[in-house]
Image (cartoon, rainbow over all chains, first blue to last red):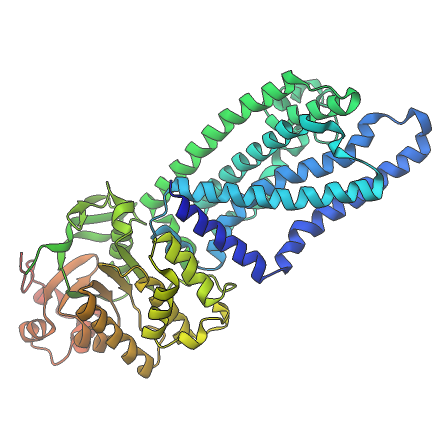
Amino acid sequence: MTFSTIHALVLRNLYLYSRTPVRLVELVFWPLVDLLVWGYLTVFLQKHTGDSFPYQITFLIGAVILWDILFRAQQGVALYFLEDVWSRNLLNVFSAPVTNADYLASTYVIGFLRAAVTSILLSVLAIVLYSFNLFELNWSLVPFVFNLLLFGWSLGMISTALIVRWGPAAETLAWAVPFFIQPFAAVYYPIDALPPAIRWIAEFIPCAHVFEGMRDGLKDGSISWINLGKATGLNVIYLILAGMLFVRMMKTARERGLLTKFVSQ
Amino acid sequence: MQDPVLEVTDLVKEFGSVRPVDGISFDLKRGEILGLLGANGAGKTTAINMILGIVTPTAGSIRVFGKELAKERIAILRRMNFCSTYTQLPGNLRVWQNLTVFGKIYRVPNLKKRIDEVLELLEIAHLKDRVSGNLSAGESTRLNLCKALLNKPELLLLDEPTASLDPDIADKVRKVVKRIREEDGTSILYTSHNMRDVEEVCDRVVFMHQGKILFVGTAAEILSHFQEESLESLFIRVARGGEVEAAADPQPVTSDQ
């Protein structure tokens, strides 16, 4: 892994965003729509339930922000690859002295930056519009958010690996993959809300434990070490497996000439 | 002749039942320009992609600078570069931004100065601040060439570099190619459908057909052997299959091996 190579690849993406500010709309617009819809739904429910308003519903706003951290991190990794496909730059990058590790590390940085931009913006807006302060969770927020980033990176690598394997026709997976798991990820509702027959699926999804842990934290200010431990353990496993899948797919792509097909299609 | 910069030995690529490259062997000497010639589907681009490490060979070996490509790919790629008419640099970035990114990837020292040099060499210094996507086809090709020359590569792979250029710009590109070979001793593997390119620029030609090498030699030697007036007429004859079997010699016409 070479710092100068990672720096160059990150720089390429930063140039891209500075050159085409309209791309920032994608980082801001959809998350903002989500925040407004879920935020005003929360306000509406709050008005009509009075003192019996359950804390879980307050967490809807937090869930919107935190889901977006995961989603933007995943997008940072997956769209990074597609940017090179769309600009017909893929062969220039993969014929340059860039290792898989350099490439992945730069996608992680971009994923982190994307998540940071969106989450900071939404957090500030949530305070201004709904008086919802995600940072009431204090330092316990940090390891949970970090776990969301890790899982976003894993999903990003899986998305990219599948796009490499199945070609340009599969590029919608860059947006779809996180939503495959969202119903089981306990983002807006607790794991207990799932039917018992499929509840076990949530147990294997790191972000489900993050959202569970953060709901607990919001309720009484405590840190749910069990949930944090489960999320971290699963994330380590997913990162290793996703990395192995990415490397395996790149090897397959070279064997089958799949990278060159992105140029010719 | 010095040791070869590039040695391709019994190279094979299979995609299922298709064999676009079928046991080719050739070498490229230091400071030599070797033309890779053949009709569409001859296997030229697949061969180049294998030399770049983008496609893994099914069999055979590729040695660059005396090292196995399969084992030391990254170290080798630092000393070579590539330009293809089928690739582009990101159209949203300015010319200098694209060259900065690739200059950093190739660890080019004094990068700003080098960017100015290559832009001057290709006569597009006035486009430095332009958005790459707004360049004409000819300007875009020259920008690709700038990228390929940034790291002063010892081995340069050019895949149809003049394909989209008008005769004036194509002539300038050919002159640049010859100049960098003379000034820097760059070894160049050059594919083209333009026979004039090949005759004017290449020291030797590898003529491919259906994944195999039909013959290797200078343009003059090949024309003499096959009693053709031009490479273009020979190209057409081979591409249409006429007398290919009779013309084909399993051994190259000339080889320094």
